[in-house]
Length: 259
Image (cartoon, rainbow, N blue to C red; front, side, top):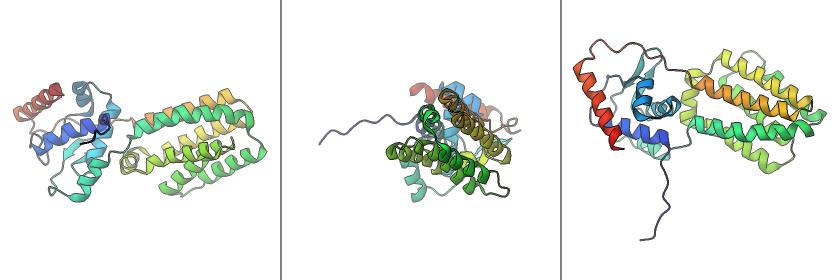
């Protein structure tokens, strides 16, 4: 049998796999609440964003339900659902991994754009920003305009490959995991902040300051990561939690030690 390339599973998928195993074993029964995000991160020795990506993945698969301000609860669902099983195998890049890649690449693009942008390029950015400020836009319309802004900056360099690559990176947010995460943390205020950050990027490019444009883009995408890194706001444990709940947490610890 020919050898096949070995791939390291994405971290958030490893976390999701462990939690799914516990759910399948009824260590966390339907209706029960998972340990808080912070507690899971400490026990696993990983960042809270990685845990958040895992919880979002499980919610998309129909294994848990996130209740903002309360916690993450196990959902009773039919076993062996083919669509959900296929989704679990796809394992797209996690939202925070994508945002970090964009931060590194697009900030470098802005450094170059600041020294090459012409009046027509600035006018294109102004037109997109004006449309983003229009009232009553849907989330999908704002996302489309957001994409146009970032691709327009890459297009300033007159490199079709680079512009297409920036667009492909942006399109990763269309995957179901990113969309589910955004549904909790994107709102009118977050979009208003993003538009103002876009304005800072535009102003630095228009001024011909590549260093300032690079810093503004890096700051914008770091702030995007921070906006998605807010806690789900877990409330106090359910009143019925007692020895059984502590026993289940012990199982989590034992499984983690085996990995």
